[in-house]
Length: 117
Image (cartoon, rainbow, N blue to C red; front, top):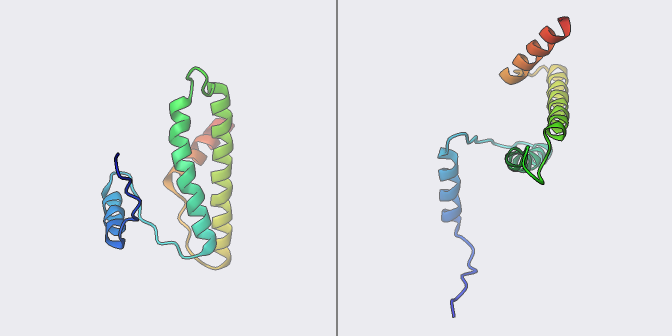
């Protein structure tokens, strides 16, 4: 009978795993400074995993239709834009420089061009 290993990884093993994860392509390292930021980070981490699964099921049989996928993506963009707007207002109020992400700037330019047509 195989023996089950239920021992927790050591502190050093956990640190090594974190260091290796930080070296992976596309990874980000973030120092969280507030309880709200920690909650947002937890949500973001789960969203990122769910989004990967969402893309895999998009257009698949018994998956997500392209129409429903477009609706979900539009809702996601609205949430991201609202959070960026909130962060900009908060930053302005406390005189902290907020840099709008390039992706949001590009999206806003595209939206502005489409509305002018």
